[in-house]
Amino acid sequence: MKGKGLTSLLISLLVVSTLMATESTSLTKANPYLPEKIAMNQGYIKSNGDIDPPTLPIERSGNMYVLKGDIFNYTIEIQKDNVMLDGNGFSLMLSSSDEQLWKPRTGSPLIQISNRSNVIINNVRFVNNFSYTDFFTDISVTNSSNIIIIQNSLNRVGVGISMTSCTNSTIIGNEFRDNSNTPGFRITDSFFINIEYNNVSGHFHGAEIDNLKFSNISRNNLTNNGGAGLYLTGNNFKNNIFENNFINNVFGLFYQGDPRATLSASAQNRVYNNYWDNNYQNIEDIAADAISSSDQSPLASPISTSFDPSLFPLPSLSSTSTSEPFPITLVTTSIASVAVIGIGLLVYFKKRKR
Image 1: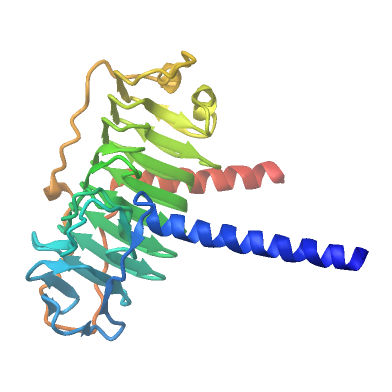
Image 2: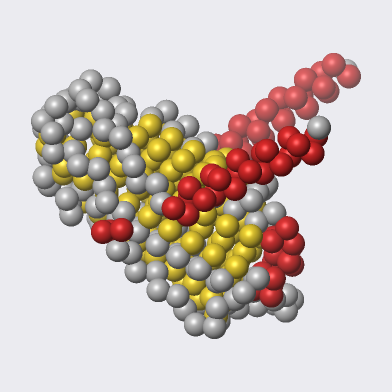
């Protein structure tokens, strides 16, 4: 009897479990607020330099790849080192003939860079033609070095730039705008990264920074974001955060999950010469701009964050050679100074151990 009772109980549990799984699946399918995954087309700049498929409107001249028209619903994966992708004012676009344009959507990044070095992404527009703000990533970079992302327009698509496990790279002069569901950009587990002259507004957090070391965050305009202008979490160590405008965010700088923890932020990161204005307070009346009180020298007025590309010349790639690499020399003096500081600290700690 006990055996039969146990068997009946197990069967009942199995039936309930199956019904719950079925109901959960149907709810998932019916829930209009869950992002729908879109199967993106795949395009490549291959390791041998070829463009695949060759019908893509990309023209190659040596190590320079130039867009000659807009590209719809493609992930462009760069599999070659020492290249520049110049958007030439054209766009990588998300578009659909689906009448229900309001549905949230997600998919693979529009540009994918992994295990590469010496790659420049310049002057590309990222455009979302859906009515709903989506959960895509414009540019995804992982395990790479000497990457320069400069003067791109990253609007309404999702996370503008996701950079993970990278070194000696620069994000400069870009515009991130209008996606209240995602951060403008996200940097994780990286070091010697220079983040300058970017305009970030209308996102959830302007930027999410996690385990970033020996880097610069400067001359950025972080405004009108629904969460923090700059959200720091994890072990962010020996970064310089200076000459940024924090304006009209819910939190100016939100550190380690609690705005009160911002008071200790300068113990690990140097925060100075930033402008703080009209960043709100939460319902517990915790100062959202607590970090401004520990800013070593807060500014009394906003600082200019306009980007002058003539100060950061890109290498010339006009050669018709398809095999010779080009050196990337766009390393600003500020990131070079961070490198010197990092080396000095390493020497200091070694001497202390002795």
